[in-house]
Length: 426
Image 1 (cartoon, rainbow, N blue to C red):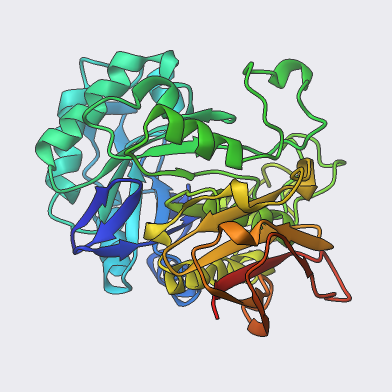
Image 2: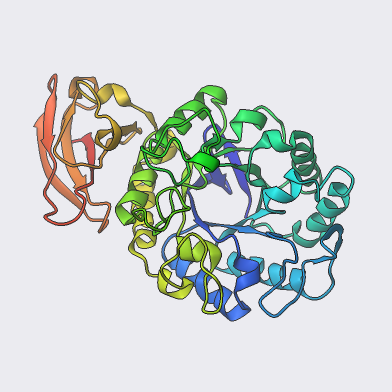
């Protein structure tokens, strides 16, 4: 398998590749090998293509049975206790299932605090290249929930060293919330694609006291990061590498707040994808930390990881992938000019992508979608409704091309009434 980029999209052995990621930060430390196999099979069968996991996440990092990653937390001295053999076995099992592993060399705090620095980075990167460099399903993710400005030259050294030693592997940067890799590294030659973290806050959480951070605040409008990245780096792919996780509290830190639900994670996926993102990463609160009995829940998690495997949002991500692949998403571009009149604000926003086969429009709140259909490159219009919950595509009718057309969204009669409209040659 050889994963490459061309323009704004990924390609696997020359064919379009849809990055459908899952967030599995503590995969190597919290799960036994049998549990890791069960998790990876679940994700493969749900249509995921990339698993994002951290190789060294915290001081004293070790497998569930105590095999340490580092001796004395020294990145220049990886331990020989079996941790790395375990991690390599997980990576190879993912390969058997057709999954790529997006590996963070460390969580970003190690670089920010200086434990991983310009003196020991060359040795650690060389060890990683020796251990994983022959695995063709590896992607490198520098960073780890951190601003690039915290230690830019150290992050650059990690990225450049890994690219030099593993020229066949793609490299990206996983940033802090409400940031994108393009803020610091967008033009760097080692960075093959951009990644942003739209984060876990809602529209009303711009100010969160001690947790305040950036001047840039788009609230829940993650599609704005796609627009910004395309302006900054028009020829690089970008994607949301960490939107709000399913069943995590709004803003992360207060369990009394509402929890993000399946409908919310659908919205983040559809908004960014129909703005031209090259893929999307899903996350689940209990999965990303692989919560088990006996461990203290982080972020007010409500369930264990094996229960969370079946949370509905994870099973609904594949529907977006299937529709976009069916309509040749790599030929697509953001096409907001087809939205007639003022586009809705906040949850009323409608995202539109025009590919060589169809116009795809996503409405989170339902109601009527009004389009400037005279602009479409089709002689006669056929339109269908795609249900992001069930994945059903239903032909709804055809019509001659005219100046404007209104499409009444079906009523699902329960839950959030989000739909995708497909307009093609009829």
